[in-house]
Image 1: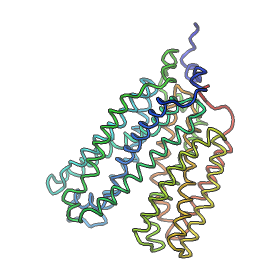
Image 2 (image 1 turned 45 degrees about the vertical axis):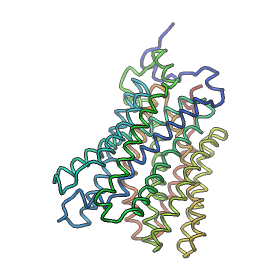
Image 3 (image 1 turned 135 degrees about the horizontal axis):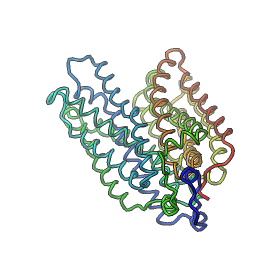
Image 4 (image 1 turned 120 degrees about the vertical axis):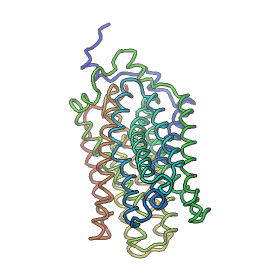
Length: 444
């Protein structure tokens, strides 16, 4: 049998057997989705729980003689390191995922996240070991950033290559919903800790509990992932000797720049929309509209639940209607619902009124559930992990880091800055969907 040269083998879309393409979802598929979504939720929880305890961490891990604003700045700086290191960790893990297998990296990413999370919960504070405390904390965040850089793209690739082609959108949407559920879990745990313990108890020991729990459950998730099997697509690549023979990233940048451009644009929309509408909104609502913190946190939790549901719905609809249509309709709905939400806040609407529009906004943000399917199809199997990982992590590091700064600066000029930015991102998402034409790399 003729074996294609290595440079041609990279561009081959490995076909799956007909039974693999057309069969319905079975028990093994649902188990794979459940374990992948559970691990992703716990990993995202481990990554974001840090931000809910920045005040406590700043107090414990930096010199008490430092001004409060400086301690907070240093703490947020350590948190941001996790974002900036994502491209490095993601590219390295994706390289080995394309060469050695998806499952190995999929399991490693959970371990690389859960162990540092567990260790953060055990770190001695500044009062005991001095400047070694923030340095150790920084090292743990570097490992966490590397882990999350490999987890998200690796999880999308893993589930996309496991399920039948006609259910890939549902699988990726479900997984994305699991990731957003990790943010909700972190928020609920932080709220529970602050309600159950006094400030002194939290400073003394209670702040450690969410980190210790996250680490333990993360390690348990790693052992559960050991029961998963390698993807059929990668096994087919191995059988046909189509594993990348050169650096996968080099092939991505040389021959698949259109896929990179599309994926980075979609990641910009994905990351910035979540940051503005979910992560930043409680603080913006309190600052710009003087709403009670309790009301904003309740609204944010409900909107995040709607977001999780929206991701699954968007993924399922993408299988039936195509991701371009779902993304376009979702972007229009998001622009309308978020504008409506802000108009109600500006008019001083009661809790029940703006809570409904905020929930609708959260559901509309679920349009991001269609994005992973477009990114999976943008690259051939042999370099898929590297293509998605590079595009996603570089774009997330840039726009994830710049978006809060841009919103904070623009908000000093107009309180509608978040609306303007989100509507602009919706236009970007629609443009990307409309421009996404031509051949896609489906496993068929």
